[in-house]
Length: 114
Length: 111
Image (cartoon, rainbow over all chains, first blue to last red; front, side, top):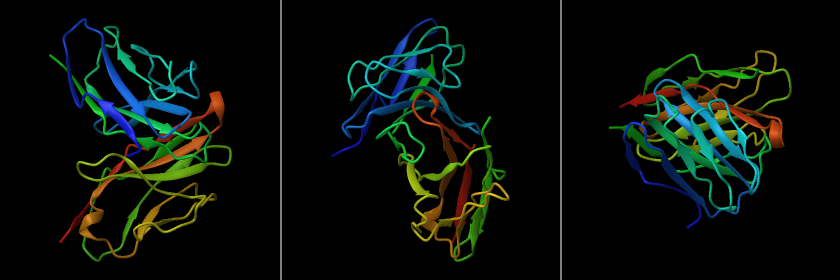
């Protein structure tokens, strides 16, 4: 069954801790994205990757880091530098990062601060 | 900078009534516009895109460059249309690529 898998579904973090959110896709897509979704804010882009070993900052990259060592995987680390990490995080992918290609989304991870 | 505006946070209609979800954009180039939908307990998914000029689940959306709008319409709303709808604009490519979302409209279709 093709698609995007995000894990875990719920994640709790203590103050000062880094935490990594997993995103895996088996769609053979080159491009992958991380968004943050807050109530009333829509989706805001954190980072995206056009291809393996490449990634660019989005609108709200501060306090986050990513890696793209494999085509199918694009993990997001929320570092202790992110002052307001409580949010819903969505991972997406597309065939390529060109405007005509739609993005496919995972189910999301909800991160909360303890 | 590109911007997508969905003026209605909430929209409530009765079953069988027409529905229109508004989307306005600001962008100087030729936009690629999309509507995404998120039903309760489901993942965000593509509903339709303007380049396809298709009707999905009875919904249509016409790009009006003069009014910089891409409103989503359906002549007869159904209860299963209740969901969160996001308008999105894509531009550029490669390192210049960007997909900008509106803040969304929550549509409720009452029986």
